[in-house]
Length: 101
Image (cartoon, rainbow, N blue to C red; front, side, top):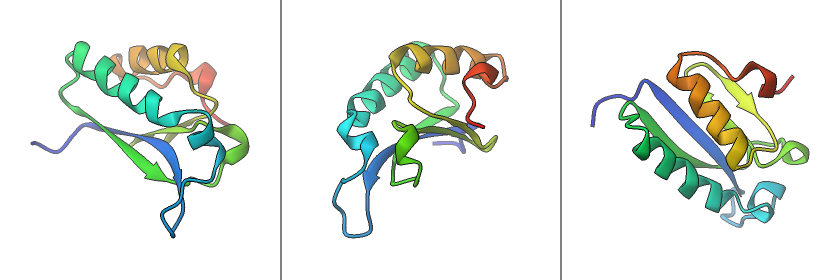
């Protein structure tokens, strides 16, 4: 695999001890990862890599999604917001209205 143009992370709430304890996990971020991977594939976004992360320490805003290398942070994501984020990413833009402050 070539180096991806974008790397999307979704918080999996995992802590150093390995247990998922945060809000993102409780709000089913694992299902969002699967949805995101399917959407990226369906859209032919071969230059995008999707990964789960440990806790990103923004539990009050979870589930959390981060796009790198741009460092665009999005909170309280759901499938509709993921669609909006991917639409913007395909245009090489942030989904400005959804960015965390």
